[in-house]
Image (tube, rainbow, N blue to C red; front, side, top):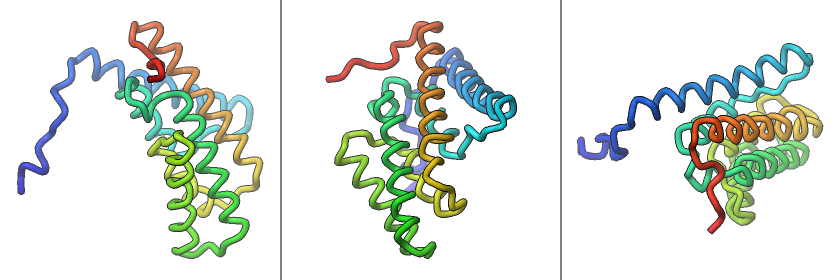
Length: 162
């Protein structure tokens, strides 16, 4: 049973650890700074999880720009539509998350952190403008930071489509 709790990833180099943390720090710091300076919210909790993929696993297919931006867009739109049509019940939230996952998979823009976007929608009941600010704007900024960050440190990102 204990074998299921043993790490399967190889031990990372110290440089990898530091760069992953620094990238996440810079991306969220920029979103927070812009939120304060522009008096418009650009932060949602799933963006923290997106940073894990963008900076700790930049070569992963689920970390690519189309997945990050497309996944958040599709999942949030699904959440907004479901919230408009369904009551804020356990089954409404579950249907929104399941629907978002199915659509991300079907459209080939799967991004696991975006699976939480419908829950954010059901918890906060935002208007449809939420799709553009903070979701679209924030995810584009995250990808922009990742592109610049990885270019400066010599990491290949994004990876070429196969």
